Image 1 (cartoon, rainbow, N blue to C red):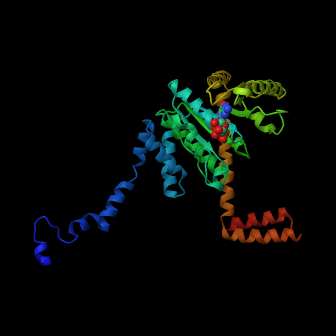
Image 2 (image 1 turned 90 degrees about the vertical axis):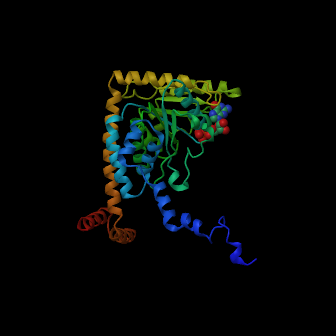
Image 3 (image 1 turned 180 degrees about the horizontal axis):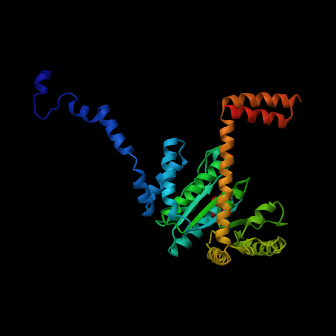
Length: 362
Ligand code: GDP
């Protein structure tokens, strides 16, 4: 049989005709465009205010985007969400890697959702800009919480500066509050400046500690203890219970040596086993006591106002700095001035005056 007769059947397709129609470039790009079509700003705001996770996640992605267009859209969303924000309790949780933060947050979060609360978990991770990793990237220790419809877990925003990451986190808090989350947990690791950053965006600051052998107070940064509203000694299980209780006594003694907090709250020390979910509900009780006290004595609102003022100034500083250093002319001249300083040919102040003057002329 010749080729032509072979193709005479009505069931035979002509060479590639139909497949060409659905796979041609125009169709592909049409489908892709449809898939990529971003919901409008109004749609996103409506979805967030309705408590929907998908628009919330999309809006957070816009906040984290580097594109000016996305940031513009993010700002509009934030402004529209702002009147619906502020109603949550913001809890910061810190502690060295391995202390059990993820395990604790899983237990704590489940306790809260069982009480009918909606919980959002965010992270400020100073290492993320270097490692491109995230402390919440590994959600394996939050297996239950990940599946909980009343929990929202968002790994940390990455960025080149802690200020940048912090700004994104603060804006994310606003969106989560507008979406109806009652409790916002912000996790950070106990290294560097990140605790100070998180402390300045939360109502209550919890430090997780381990009962170590020997002197409990060694190697602990005084500043972190001073910031803590509660210290929870974790892994108080098995052979460790006795040591944890001893550590509790020691920390309690130590905390009494610090001056009274502006909130008039006396920080508490508890023991817990995040793994066995013991002592976790007590932490929530403590937080409720703290909120009641600080709302009654007006510290709660005062603190939030102070935090907002602090962030305003921080943001201005960051903008000015970025604006200054981004100019190529400044970069070149700065290098020259650094050489002059090394050679003792100028002073830091004269060099700064010169560079700032130069910037004003740009
Ligand atoms: P993170 O790095 O601070 O987030 O710590 P993880 O939550 O990842 O916990 C580190 C390790 O400690 C894991 O192997 C946990 O299973 C374990 N762990 C966490 N909490 C407890 C606890 O209360 N008791 C015990 N025995 N182990 C725990």
